[in-house]
Length: 393
Image (cartoon, helix red, strand yellow):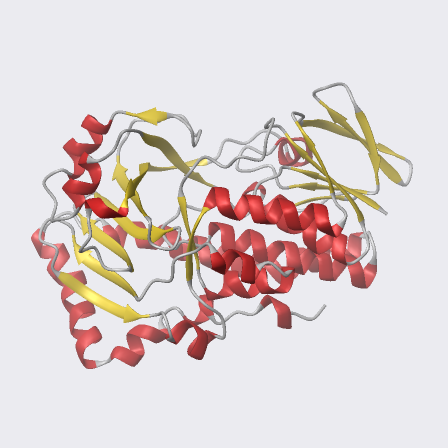
């Protein structure tokens, strides 16, 4: 049976691999003229890398990634450490899979090669614009005028999904009240920056730094609360001078990283409340199309990877059917909703607005890290310990 996948991002390509491996004919429709992800870093926690292992691409991804030594929180303006969680060895011993930092473009390239090797077709320069039911099958219309008959349509086309809009109607995503800046810098501008994922917390804003491409580049993300709505596009350029106004007085090496920027990007952060349903009449959704979330838990890509494998298991077990799609949603919706709630809560934790609220929040966290390190490490077990390979349908 044939499945058309709308969207050739991380979720769409992972689904193409997983579904091809269990015997479906797959065609991915991607609006870009080339599978080129705008350069940015990506955190792949152990639950995500277990999914990549299930897809058969973990070894390739690990070869081009960086391995963080610790996961840390620091006070942005002083650099004072709040907590530090060892993760390099612990990821494998505690969770059974590595924690990796990778470049999105590198991951997309690996996933695309794997999808094609598995037998999927990738159609570039086209976008799914509508679908109609044709008896027991579907006809999917593209903006190029082409019509693709299929048995199932999978919407992996992002937060403003065309597939979701036709299924559930027009509904604006929720603006989180924050915009995100991102940029990449050569590692030599901050040689003393630890090989760690560091959250730098501050009043109404926070930054994240970590290394990608085996340590050659530093990925910087700065999130700033604002009432101004900006473009959702990931490729909207921002003025590095404006970025320096937000973070230029923070502890080193943040100013040095920002000063090295020849280009930066900025976009508004949106999410959605859990949808009433993900599927209807042989059409279903995956990843940001059904559960977009702010990046404050670093789980957006991980959730899409998990979705793809669970969907493939359900369809392999029951075929293209309402019961298979209902099972997929039943298995995935509670977890993705919980991760969304956690990500939303983290923005408040990272953005404490004054010395009193910072002391009340970060003081106990620092004390717990010193006195009860095992408790601090256990806080992420419910996310990182999940193994999509063990999901039964």
